[in-house]
Amino acid sequence: PASLIIAPSVLAANFARLGEEVTAIENAGANWIHLDVMDGHFVPNISFGPAVVKALRPCSSLPFDVHLMIEPCDPYLEDFAKAGADHITVHAEAGPHLHRSLQRIRALGVKSGVSLCPATPPEQLSQVLDMVDIILVMTVNPGFGGQKFLTSQIAKIARLREMIDASGHDIRLAVDGGIDAETAPLAVTAGADVLIAGSAVYGAADYSAAIHGLRGAGQT
Ligand code: DX5
Ligand code: ZN
Image (tube, rainbow, N blue to C red; front, side, top):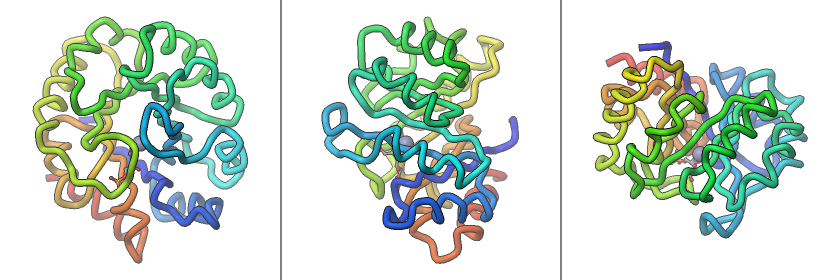
């Protein structure tokens, strides 16, 4: 497969010194910075918005991978692009016009992503494979870090890998939720090539060792 991307989620970082926490994971070997945006409406938690993404932009040269758990998402796409997002991922469940949202993201010059909650089937994406650069499979219910990986999602990862390969499009397949050194190999074996991890990285005493552990787990 394509080389494995490790994308730590700052949701599990120390919010009192977020800039340093972003710089620290870049120095520890991360590939992307995953930024979880929650609105207290689409998901039952509130995190941060575009002003925080903008404030963090000078703290790292890595791609900013912004995961929008907000409804509606379209009114905010331009704000996040201007704030410095390199990728914007929206939820297939967050509105009736997924195709339009993906068009708008690409028109902003940003890579487009779509995420599926655990209850949403992979076939939901069959009509947008030409519109996405990243597919993100939630392996927990979105809203909180530190939850247990849902093994029921492994078949969905495998099905999406088949759909991506059959499409011929260049699409990254990400997993998010409960990813650690034990669950990472399950996701990679099923076909994931991006590992998003919050607590497994920021909960570790040594960020570099945690990132290397995830990368190694992906090589099995
Ligand atoms: C959950 C977020 C995840 C979260 C993952 O809604 O999308 O990115 O930060 O946290 P862990 O790795 O702790 O499950
Ligand atoms: Zn996320």
